[in-house]
Length: 209
Image (cartoon, rainbow, N blue to C red; front, side, top):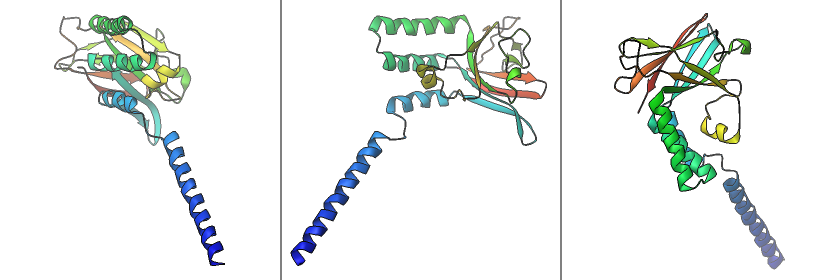
């Protein structure tokens, strides 16, 4: 009887160890933490994201999340694309060269916008409900010369623009680098994005580097 009891205990222990090992394997397979490459990418992006909201009492009238596309952010985007697609060295170099060229031509901002009424989320139209401006540290402002709606919620866009909420619309805004008087918009790596509309105004400080 004692031998049988010991055998039963050994079987129970073996089953318990097997279950623990299986739980460990499952925890590794379904680890909710970000992969190292995404942690590295999001650390760069998070340090450049700017957010502001407009409220009507407890209700949200508008929520804005902006990402200025300075060279540090652009390089992080290129590096993440390279990890995703494994291009040839020449293709990777072209990706970076294209980003450098875009950065030299204009000040570009990715803007994720949430509005309770989607019909007012129309920043790409000729007369949008909200208007966007970049304001220099000296108070001079410029309007975007190009406003594009990004529609494709692809896997790579989901990875790169993880701040793009499921009910948001994502825009690419392109601004001149100098004001009408020839003054730079960005001074010491800083300026602000101002969003203004009927419910009020939001101000998002942007960091360019």
